[in-house]
Length: 188
Image 1 (cartoon, one colour):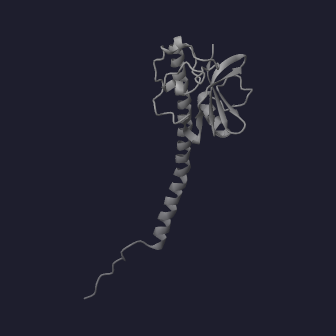
Image 2: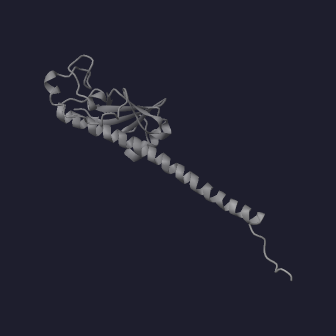
């Protein structure tokens, strides 16, 4: 008795190659899209960190009637000492320190004297004032941010990618080197 002819089990080399080409095309199409989403998420996180610090500084200002001098003032009550200064550089008057109702940021968010943020950057502990259009602004600086990332953050915050010193209306600036400057709030 003769056995019926049957096809061999498994796939041919051609079928395997076609499947690999299809998988390669799918991976090639999905990887750039996925990386773009990750990058966009990092830019959004930095924008949110800047907005959160701005909000915390404004709440501090409402309570203490002074702008905070550094991030530590947002999670620990400032002291009436020469080592703990408000934004203008002056010492906090003892009379206003009792108004502190913080913490305004979660304790532990700030490690040492910096706040790590997205894109490998870190927020500089000390707040500063920057004159812009003859108005002083509470300024938050973020180090280790390349210009392209500063432009992407500006696109989210200011709806344009101009981070030059001549940008009339935006809050995001970039200083040659690696520093993003955020004009957080007008100082009155």
